[in-house]
Image (cartoon, rainbow, N blue to C red; front, side, top):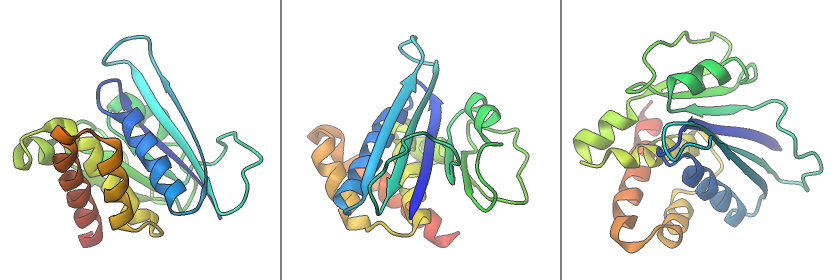
Length: 178
């Protein structure tokens, strides 16, 4: 098994954090993982992405060639990456921020209003990345929620740890009801 995952958006949305946490979750599940990140020189607002390769065998080729899962949190990221997800793959979009979409019939396409949910029900729109991460984890289908929560509790500092765990759980629940 080898899966390629991209989480993308703009600087300041927690894209790099979500990618790093995802990589750590997968590693603690016993998989081989490669995680890279790229972001613009702007402090906030520039293009940003995190790429994760996960495998149950040693990873010899670290190039991202056929992403099966793509999460986008900006229109720019959606426009740039939505065509790259492989046939039969999964495309997850924060529909609060990415309004103009054209679903592809050959992929599973999910619109999740993560930023709206984070702002309205959790009072912190900054945890939209964790809502989308929880959604993604459930769709991956081979990660335990308890393990994911444990990684977050070790990766995120005490003042905001609990809200991030709640956001992850909310995303997982939304995905499991979809």
